[in-house]
Length: 412
Image 1 (cartoon, rainbow, N blue to C red):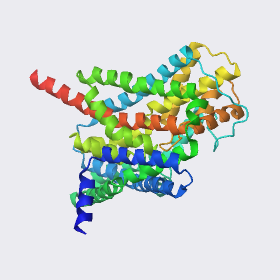
Image 2 (image 1 turned 180 degrees about the vertical axis):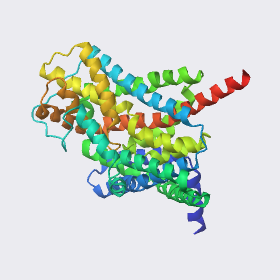
Image 3 (image 1 turned 135 degrees about the vertical axis):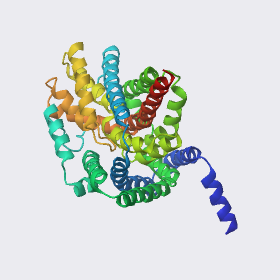
Image 4 (image 1 turned 45 degrees about the horizontal axis):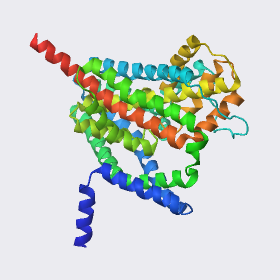
């Protein structure tokens, strides 16, 4: 028993990143050697399901508690972080437009099975959906993991608590948030086993053929996301904090992006980002709202996916798209990405909406969605890693920017 306890302690003391890499390697090997052992994949399904189940409750309690406890003075930071989220998403879409014109890609549309679900028909549909999600029944919003609705009602509840509730009541809400946070930490300890199952399923189902069949499209998507991650986002950050942003960004990619790569869910990665922000020494009142908000509106990777796939369809069917029209598409992709679901493949169903601006029918566009699902093991993984890691990154940048301005005012 003592040996088991000692082994368990060593395992717990080992860095989570190292444990995840071990799970990754074992999952890949098992996927290649014994792909028929499908029971291994259950580990991944259980892990992601557990995170998705607890995350909505965590977000609701954290946001409500943070707003109720807020002492003021956070307004400037929220303006900064929202600006960072939207500007970076727009820049990612514009970069995808430029790359798609420099390296046009076509895809085989005939014979591809349709993707799941119906997509929005136009930009007005996106706004109507956002509005409908916002005022959804709060219990239903929690049950369906509708984070826009959860954020809306949590903010309303937090404001009501701040105005009317006693300190004792606010303290109870805070204690509940702490309890749920601890549950999330326990779940996260099983991440290496969950990722083992997720990697096993991906390798067993897709093998290595996926890298060949849609290689050019994958390279274009990953290239755009990589440029956004390592050039655009750090440059935007440098403009605000005026210091080397790469050490901070590397930490966010390593601790948040790596986990998001395998879970493929910005929503499920919210607890990871919360813990990272805490260890970075950020203000809990700020990050407990900005992180859930970022998982909803900070969608760099989604903007790239929507833009690249839409232009790939246009190139395939022979639609002539002017550069000016494509730039307008980047704005549409930015707005659409902000309404993308925070779950795996959430951005793909907005591709037909973007295609509709070029007069491309839903039947053809939905075939592109199917292609997206086929390459999703790579595209959606990289997309989510970019989206989620930049949530924590820009939250930190907004706070450091605020501190820098405060220090400058003190010096003056």
